[in-house]
Length: 298
Ligand code: CO
Image (cartoon, rainbow, N blue to C red; front, side, top):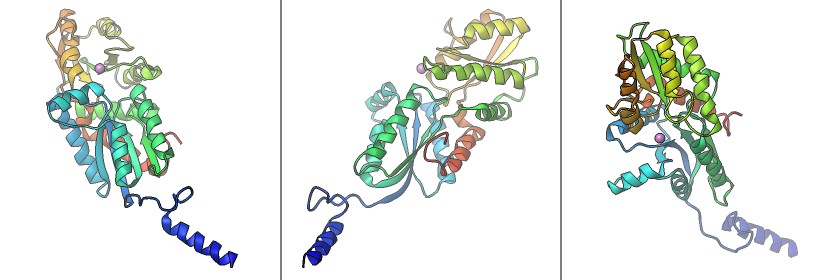
């Protein structure tokens, strides 16, 4: 008799669902859904620069046709600015909470940041917590940002030279890549990129707005080489605020103005990296490979 009661109890509990440890009933969870891809970027409030994101989305939809694609911006300031214009963009945490609430069980979060800096580490940490939650997302993968290792630096430089550097550039003209720079230890990646750039093309240099190498270091190298003309290219996902103001504006402290003052003709190339197929293909290839790995780097 006791045995029958036990079996009945077990059946009742399994019918009530897995949450029956403490309660008798429990609410039914959302209907399980398939895979979602959450694209996470710093964001931009420059409408022209946002076209790069539309391009990324189109390419991702083609590469992953059965996957729900969502966006999140890590920049609070940009989200606030866009909200004031009536455009609501989620933070990564809100986007993950929505996916969890809707029943997505497999979520891949792809960072569209340049390198694994402060924003990347924050979203990576928080995404893992969504997996640990009760009723959380079953499996969350996080894809590394663009520049993470030797191979990715080579791939990005290849893409820059095949798709971004204007065809009319002569070998004696410099190609100057302008990165953002960060106070995070990953700032060292820009110096590694400078080394790789110099190996690829003696007249290709890398500088940053807020980190190292500095613009002054770049300028000193250009002067030592006797460069007369330099193409300025953003080493950023989109050609947004920094490209417009710090790189290409007529303000006296912009890179263009400072080069002009030094007698070097500056030609800004106003395109973000995410506008180019060769760059998006790096992310897509990595995403396809990462389907085998739960955590980045493993
Ligand atoms: Co900035």
